[in-house]
Image 1 (cartoon, helix red, strand yellow):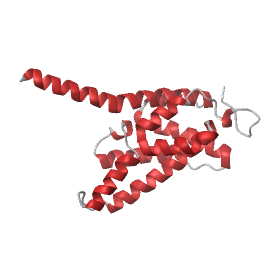
Image 2 (cartoon, helix red, strand yellow):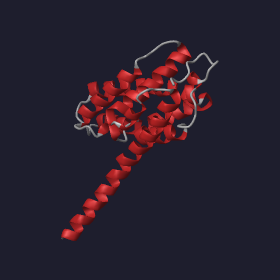
Image 3 (tube, helix red, strand yellow):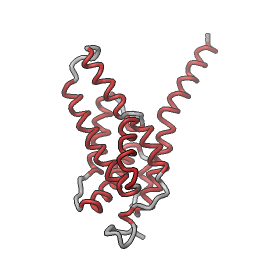
Image 4 (cartoon, one colour):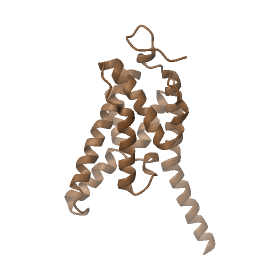
Length: 190
């Protein structure tokens, strides 16, 4: 009986590590490298779960400022989004997790099918958060890889944290257009 318990615990631990650990490591590596390439001062915050959303938001703000001349304060919004989702999920593991459109649409389907109690206000907020996250990520991808910005944004929203982590990891070595001198952007701080 103890051997079975140990195997179940080990299996659970490995699955949990894969679902939460791999995206966390990929996103941490990607955001750290991207923040360094963009010249952000506190790139090490990419490794702190809620603060990493602030780093991502700072990169999105930088891209937004370069592309449209406006700051949307994504660095604040993305941290507040993760706090809201963590509170809604009942713990602080959500910012490390696999959220995104798939869990959102599954919850919406459960609501429509009557399987989930009335979460209509929650769903409206979640869909609004998903839309604003899409705007933030679009600005970021437009700054790094304009030819694939729409595709990467959609994939990030559909596949959530895991998809976003993989896509950010793929572009981590690129220099953003906002950091290249002569493009109207502002270069990295030295």
